[in-house]
Structure formats: structure tokens, C-alpha cells
Length: 405
Image 1 (cartoon, one colour):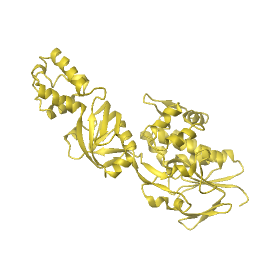
Image 2 (cartoon, rainbow, N blue to C red):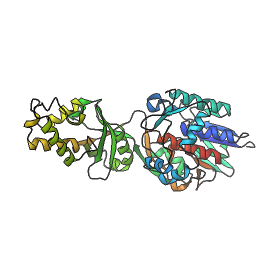
Image 3 (cartoon, rainbow, N blue to C red):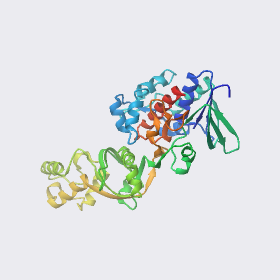
Image 4 (cartoon, rainbow, N blue to C red):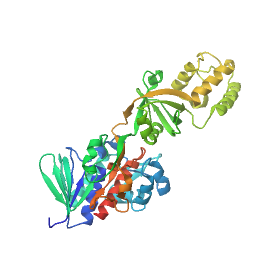
């Protein structure tokens, strides 16, 4: 093995980014990327509804790390080397301009993930990265001057440096070849999922959303605010997805059976709603409650609240009793549902768990227990909430690994 050889395992965002940047920095090295499936960059292609949520417009590192339930301390160090600004510059210098939307998510200006896929493929070709599909790794053996990688099909590859960037997996067995190299694995569990609420009348309102709800898990300190979407199976939207990420382990331990509490208008509590209701009632005493919703609550949701509070449609605001008032206020600020199970959010399969972070040097992304082995992306016990944060962690860790192989 006279020529320096770098092998990258994983053909997703982290693997491609690591391979391209490693090939650019090591012009004389052979860089080989192994992907077990028949498709490259498949997650990049489908993410963000086919638009690819490349990163998030957060430029303060102290703020940025707050969007990662796991890996904050390590990413704080890593983001000083490569962060959102570097990601934007990297793609823009290669002809792909990015834009930020109102909620901070960043997409290519083309609104198509194909722009990102094409850019990465062109860079791989430019720097002569060799791509091998249907290349499933069976075992990795440590050698004096590098590694011997044995494939499921019987083939094998030798390399001096190895970057593992094959993403997260829900199965512990998929990490076995890493434990054989001396690494410990935090047990993988799902993150970023929606809540199933079986047999609930609210599912008839599927497709309806509110912009600022607060969702909490009873009996825990878990709570998140944001948009909430009613689906035909339960609840989704940013508030639920953020909550699923922060509560990934706790909800797994509860077998996804738990009580959720919803404040449909997070800016209010029971007392402030009562006060507002009183004023509203006095001003609109002669109007029907059903045709005059409070606080611009969507009409269908308002009708659902009234039915739940046993308030008949033709009742006038002036005739609403104190008991009905209190029940309606309680429903708006403390509505409860029984969750039983979860559903993966679109194609955004994310795991919490992976290679233990204290076994990796985040200055270089090199393993502390196995020399010349590097990591990038979701194979590590790092995961972010929805909004481009997982891709940013992938670009960052991949870039650092690429500069140090």
C-alpha cells in the first residue's frame, strides 16, 4: 500500500462531505467511499420535503448548541472549527446559494435538494473520489499501518486511514464491528417522531394547526413550544418533534405510552384566559359563542373545544355559566391526551445513541481508542432537533475528520 489510502464508510451527507474534503486536502491520496445500498445521498435527496434543509441560520455557537439534546459540549468545540457560516460559504463558493426562511431553516435558493446532490457529486468527481455501491462491510481488522475491511461479498480493501460515517441505526447489532475495535456504544433509540393518539375525536381535525402551542409530558419536566399539527393518527409539528428529541430516552423507557398536556395558546395560562374571557363575554354578550371564537382560534378547533366543554352551539356569550367558562379555559390551556406509540416523521429517521462521545477527540474526530480511525455524522451519539441541525452536525464533524486524516 505505497499510495496513502483513505476509506470512508457511508454514502450520506457526512460520508460524502468527509470524502470530498479529504480528497481535496490529500491530493496524492486515494479516497474510496463505500455505500452498502444502491443509492447515494438518499437522505439529502428527500429531506425538507425534497428541498434539503442544509443548515439553520443560527450564527451564535452558544445558541446553536442548544438545539442538540446530545453532544452539546463536544459540538461547542467542533463548531469553532466549522459552523453555519462555513457551511454557507462552502456551498456558495461551489455555485449553490442558500436562503433562510422565517423560522431559520436554510435551503438552496433553487428550492430543490438536487442542487445539493449535484454539487456533492460534482465535487466527488472533481477530486477523484472512488464510489462503490452495494458495498456492505462485514468486518474491520486493525493492522499495524491501518485497516483491512472485509466485505459481505467476499472482497476486501486496505487503507491507512478510515472514516466511519454510515449514520445511525436502530439496531445495536449494526455497531458490532465498532465494539470489536474497542468502542462503546450508547444504546440506539429513535428520535424525531410524532405521537400516536388512538381513538381520539380530534383526529377529525387532521391538517389543522396552531402556531404557538406548549406541549408537555405529564410526570416529567419535558416541555416544548412551537407550532402543533393535528394528524389523522395524533399530533405532529415542531413542538412535538422537538419534544420527541429531548425526551427520546424517557419516552422509549415508557414504551411510548404517556400522557401529553397541551396548552393550545402558550402565551396564556388559566388565570389570564379567565380574565380575557370575562372581558370578551361583556363585550359580546349578545353574540353566539359558536360563531364568535375567542382569540382567533380556528373555527373547527373552537367548535371542538365548545363540544368538549358541553357548550351548545346556539348559546350566547352572556349566558355562559362560570362552570362552563372554567371548563373551556381548562381545555384551552391544559388539554390532555393519552399517547400510545409513535410514527417516524416523514423520511427523517434519526437515532439518539451511537459511539460514546468521550471516546472521540473532537479537535480531530479521531478515535481515542483506535488510532487512524475517525468518525463523522450520526454514527456518533449526537442528534439535533428538526430544522437543519442534524445536517450541520454532519458537515462539521465530516469536515474536521477530513482535515485530520
